[in-house]
Each structure stands twice: as C-alpha cells, then as structure tokens.
Image 1: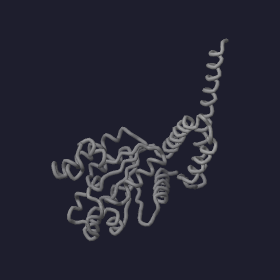
Image 2: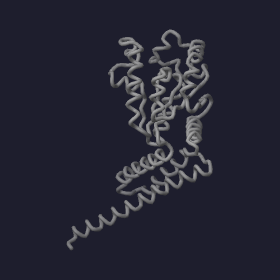
Image 3: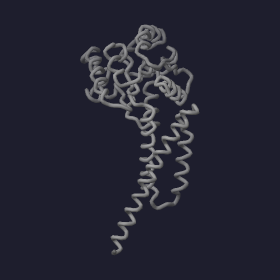
Image 4: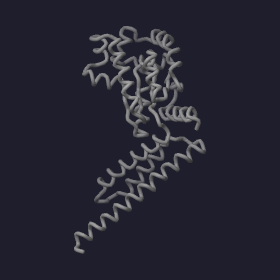
Length: 261
C-alpha cells in the first residue's frame, strides 16, 4: 500500500466514525426530547443553545480548520432542530389572527428554533404576483387576492413541518379553513385592540386600514371577525404582555396537549 492509498483508508475510517457519531448524536437528541416531554420541561431552551455555541467557539479557538468545522456544526445543529420538529409536529402549523397579533414574529421565531420552512402568505403571494399587497387590492380587487390565498393553502397540503403565517383575512373564508385543517393545526394569536394599534400604527401596507388606523376601528373590525377566527382555531394564544419565548412555549404545549401528549 502506498502513502496515497493509506491516507484514503484513514479518511474512510474517519468517515465511518463521523457517521457513527452522528447516528449516536441524533438518537441522543430524541432522548432529550422524550425526557422534556415526560417531565413537562420547556421544549425551547435558547440559553442552552447559546451555551453550546460558546462551547463550540472555545473548542475551535485558534484551530486552523475553525471555519470549516463551524460550517459543519451549523448544519448538524440545523438537522437536530429538524429532528425535534418531526418528533413534535407531523403536520403544518397554521397561524391566523388579526393584523398585528404577532403571526410574523412568532412564525419567524418558530421557524428558526426548529429549522422549519416558513411560508409568509402575504409575502409569497406578493412575490409571485410581483406586486405589493396594496397594489394587488387596487388593481384586481379583494376577491382576486382571496382566491390566491385559497390556492396557496391547497398547495401547502402536500407539505409538512411548515409554519404558515396567514394574512388577517384568510380565516374569514370557510373554504380556506377547510383547506388549512387538511394538513395543519390552526393556531389563533390574539391581542387587545390597543396592542394591535401600537403594533400597526406606523405600517403603510395594511390596505384594509386605509384612512381608519385607530383603536376604535380596529376594535370594531376585530369583533366582526372574532367568531370566525375562534371557529377556525384549534388553539388560541393571547399575546399581550408576553415574550416571544413565552408565546412559543405556550403554543407548543397546547399543540402537544391537542395531540394527546
């Protein structure tokens, strides 16, 4: 055996060790998830994630392969998150609620923590149409826009482990609710009219509030929609005066209870 063949053999042995280590690591991730469930511990633990990050940085300090190893570890951690998501959710999580209730914020956080695909419906439709939402309303009308929402929800039925953040009017259409529930759990995020106003008052992409951006109008519109929102929801989460982490933990807990876990 010449030196090149020897090096290749050593490399193959290293690869086998890496595969065995990854299998062991993924199994441990599943054990941790099972332990958290059994003892009712918080699923999301950003402090532990930060601790792992610090440990990795310390371990790789002054290592000449630092960037390459760090790149690999980032992918390993993302895959760990996917394993957690698959164990928790065999379906899509569909977030509904009035504008400013926190759908975009919560969906973004959940997507990051579990490395789940995020579909922001308004953004997806805007990109496909190559127009802003206000321009779609102005050019084609609300009915056209609502049909685009329904079409997108139907497409998402072939997916799983996705976070779908719906526009404020999506759940008002009964057909949409039917489509949401075919492969998803519907989570309603709510907040007081005053909280909603504070969150949206400086936004210029809320066509339904044009000329009516005030607490009174928001409260009236929320009340008109409340019954349909609540009828569509599998889970309801109040977002007032809660941190993003608190909201997400409550959401996960309620979904697990819904699944009988």
